[in-house]
Length: 95
Image (cartoon, helix red, strand yellow):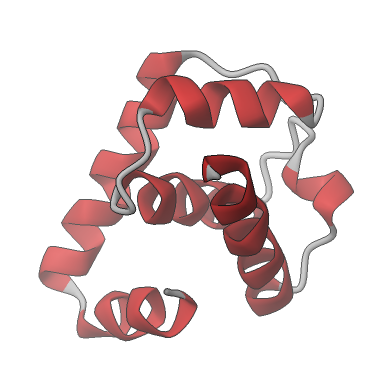
């Protein structure tokens, strides 16, 4: 069940940021790709989905990531949501 949620959020995030699934699941460090990944982590974590599931689903798509990196991404977006109303609007749109 959580996999379907992950896939749905992946589709929404890639469409919004205009990045491909392949880009999202590579070590690409372009800001829009990193932001897309972090927002994906944030959305999944607020579903709620454990970070271990997020790690597994990312790995299933070829992107090996540490749990601490997922936590960092979630924290970064949470801070943006708290300070920037545009992020709140974006998160609500993607939910």
